[in-house]
Image (cartoon, helix red, strand yellow):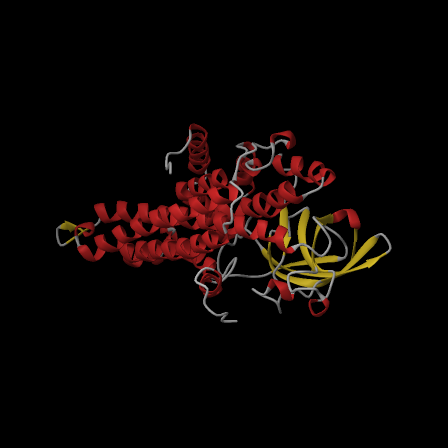
Length: 389
């Protein structure tokens, strides 16, 4: 095992830190308050090549792996951008580039990848549904063949970036669950160009991450071509896993970075703030939680990097991505919570940014899969315990 970053990876970290330096917490505080998309930041991320990290060089990308993407995301987040910085570019970098790079036809790669690498095209993924939730196999959005086309109807919810995206990875059923040979069969993935009159997108007011919208998506008789299928008809489950696993480690890297960002702020404050003649960091009630946060974040980072390395090397990684997501969220939340406690009342004030990071980090207890569902998956598929659902 080699835990040393390569020279190229160190360059990625430095490039990410350079970008983050130009977009400090004050910038993200402003776009969050105004509910504005961070256009300047996205442009800088595109110019730095971050959206093309895993896109092959022949299509305008860097041809790197998911580990490199995680290193980049963590450096952006910890450098001052927080989770907002990750989630601004994440939908395109993960929901678009990953599945098309790995499963797209030659024509699909030529159509989409260069435009994502150049920043011309943004992407989103239409997966979650009101009545399916974490049970993706119960997807109710249908795609019915009619001649050379498919007619798609259904509803998706909490679809990040759908209001801006020029493309969507849309998960449908071409065979009803009750008629499928097995429950993982019958799912079909489509690449859909947006906007389209048959697709209505409505942003959902939410608790945090106000600079990126999550949306209700209503699909009414959307017509797509057979050439728009990603992979094979009815066999979309395994390609979908090749999106969900990168999403989990990408999110993990962002949450860990946010945890390190909050921890650094708290440590600086604990050194300077004096009560009863001593820095508050000298008191074990402050010092021990911050030290614990450091240990938790470093440990979660190891699992995240391991999961990404397994992914890049074509090895089974479902267990590792689940454990990475579980522990990254626990560590990130712990770090931000105790940063807020360190600042006391100031931690609740908008101008110190901790309350915003608290709102951001708590989303990931619910997405992209809840902590409870993650534990259930580890219990059943790793420990071999009976299914709990």
